[in-house]
Length: 458
Image (cartoon, rainbow, N blue to C red; front, side, top):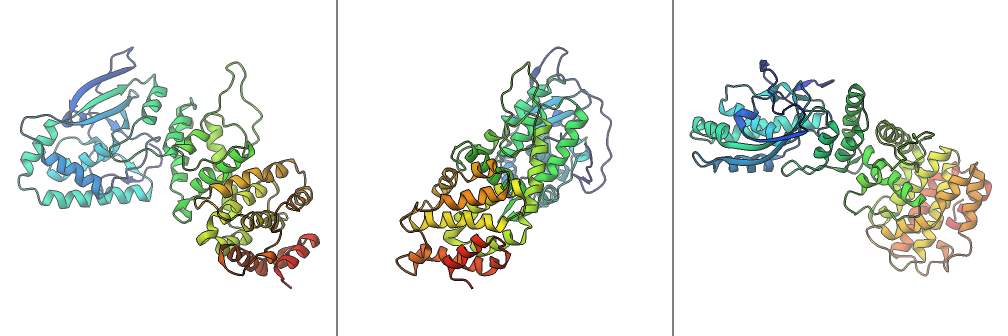
């Protein structure tokens, strides 16, 4: 596997040549057999690029160890299914990675002196390396408390068994399907795991698939950009997801099961008509394979540029707290949609249009849903995205957006709020603080005068 640097075992471990053990007959797509752990460890096991990193925590490791201590003499101890893909060189682990790596480190700590193939595997990501190091430490502590290590080692190697399901070399698509439908014990697949496997199956060239998978793994390891979420989730799971849904007048169902996976699966196409003409617009149909990975990478780069804009950072610092966070988050989505079309050109003026109309929505609403669904529905129905898409220049969008807010609300200015306290007034004050900072950035006279009139700024 390309670009791997850190070995699973920190001490040197000599690789043994065992040859490829055939577990599937020629012409078969799938075979199933029961194998004990010692037999499984004689196989040329490997971790494919579409697999997730090792991520078991102390609880998962300890639960497995306590289960192993309960093995009764001469009674098989079944530990679920392991799914392998036979590529004629080695067996890629589709499902069972977490269990097999943990068992490998347990066998090693107990003094197992036969071949352990996964000690020849390694991970790039610092998070996976930390989990491996932690597993070794936890296992070391657990083994130190074991009184009869030799007997336990023999029971684990001989009595722990798996139903080993092997998919043939010619049926890689089936291997991805199995991967997409399996969960390692206690660690469910994420939407991004499933999308990775789903779109890799459209890439016929193995080297291209490996290259794309390595790049994807690096994207998964991007650092947090907002609270504990990274640029992949903020871009694809939040902002682009909302923009795609709102453009089609569909609500953003961010609490629904697998909503990210469902949104970015390959769109249906006609078998006789090849896809062409992609422009990497945020709302375009997703093609299976390299288009998806390029789409994601492109919009992550745009989002990272967007959040580096000083004004965007200022808005987040001044508005993203308490009861106003759901408004700030939705404003960020709308502003990002504008940025994708026009860049930083009149970005501050566009924010005024979005924030003023959203503020009027809040001033005229007695209550809003704390999960943000009402605010997001308002953004969808505002038709701001359609205005942006149809505008060939910022001037047309700004003019239409300003006109959209006129005479639509009973309270049409924060100056007319009935009292100078509460959540509504707090939002007015938060926006006024933003414009105290940002008024010098406004170059359009009309919008500048509206800000001065609304917020009393000189």
